[in-house]
Amino acid sequence: MIIAVTGTPGTGKTGVARELARLYGYKYVNLNRTAEKEGLVTGVDPERHSKIIDTDRLGELLVPDDSVVDGHLSHFVLADIIVVLRTRPDILERRLKKRKWSRKKIGENLEAEILGTCSSEAFESGEKVLEFDTSKGSGKKAAKTIKGLIDNNEDTEDIDWLEKYEKMLIR
Image (cartoon, rainbow, N blue to C red; front, side):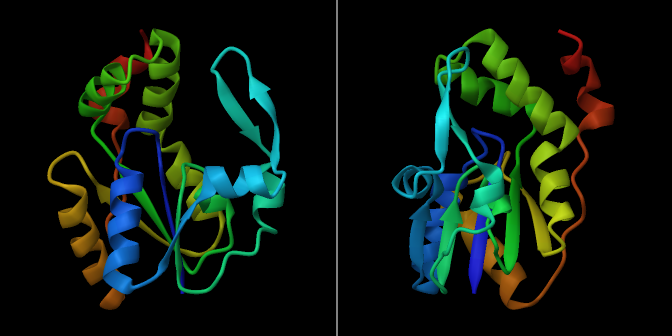
């Protein structure tokens, strides 16, 4: 089984993905490093200081079975299950400020979280998608709960921040 762990930056992907890999005894795959090794980085966005990755080619990436793929674009990789981590926008904003990101970059990521960009793209894949709120608790606790959902073939309710946090979009 291949599990993709995706979400807006700051939602806890790395901690959850590493712990899921440990719980399952799977290989942990850092998508950013893998994309670099496979030549999928097409440039650097000078304004955001972030790598530009060819998302079309991510779908062709061969990920070993029994892997957990970590990255905010991992929902473009062929996976059996896509776990989308979501975080309340007010909490996410604090986390991103701690990273000393620019106001603009924080705003773009808050917008993506409020609008559910990663979730929308994940649902387009046609694979099983689980949304999980990481606003509270540890990555280890989240991973344990997510493993239970996967093992029991349970679904989760969609997370929608728009109504409560739409004012954050207007900044």
